Amino acid sequence: MMRPEEPRPERSGRPDDAYKIFGRQLQQLRTACGVSPAAAARHIGGSNAKISRLEGGRTAAKDEDLDKLLNLYGVTDTAKRRALHRFAYRLNDWKSWDARSGWLCSYLVLEAVAQDIRTYENAFIPGLLQTRTYATAIVRRHRNDDEVHRRVELRMRRQHAVLEQHTTRLWAIIDRAALDADLLHGCVTRPEQVMREQIEFLIRSACLRNVTLQVLPRGDSFRAGFTTPFSLLRLDPSVADVAYLEQMDHAFFLDDPDRADSYRQAMTLLGYHAGEPSTTLETLQKALTELPV
Image (cartoon, rainbow, N blue to C red; front, side):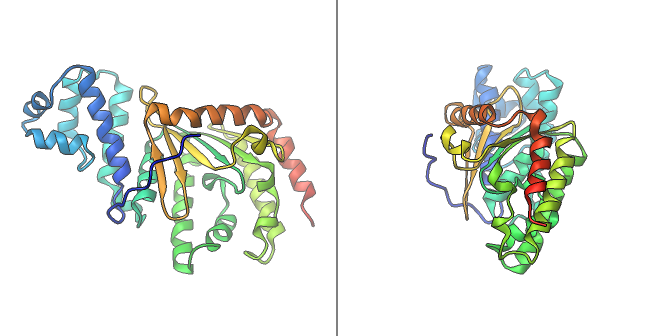
């Protein structure tokens, strides 16, 4: 797969990548209909610099300006207009996430407006499907106690939005090794019990109408050629998916169609190697029986 570009420094907490992705969407709409930056500026009673700031990700659009621009660009599809307004709203409300790092805040903004989330994890349970106890054990491996509490509460808030409001479709592929309790040893006093609760939660989640869960047999992630976790966020069917790759202290966002395409292909290949969704419950039940009592 293509190597991501080097991470860029961000202002603390500000979702710079999400701003830039929003700006590129506006720019694509403008250029697609042949409108110049000067004409767009005149239409909203602003300057060329204002359009440059919007499209360059330095500011978010106000509702009134966004409506005027979408009218000028001939965007009549109600769903698309609603999606862009929701995106702008989340950008204007980014401080409510209290993310403290720009890359994490960018992801939270994008996740909140995504119609579809596709994620692959090779070692852990995906964050949106973690129990509170499991999440606490995993986050504690790398964070202090204050940060653990804040991160886990944020994860539970995100989970509620996806699993209980049913506004986003989630497709998750996990490696069978992620269902073992080995990774939890040294993090909690009863790792087998924590994993038992986690698998039981996965069983309940897999029955939700907006969740598709698949489990890769042991070693198949290596045979498929993908061993790095990633997520794909579909903000709007008419624009490219955003590929998200998280590292220890930064992340990469790829919204260029050519660069994100390799991750779409990876998800398809991993889904092919994984067990059918119809067999997931059987696999999870078997994993339960294999846990030490």
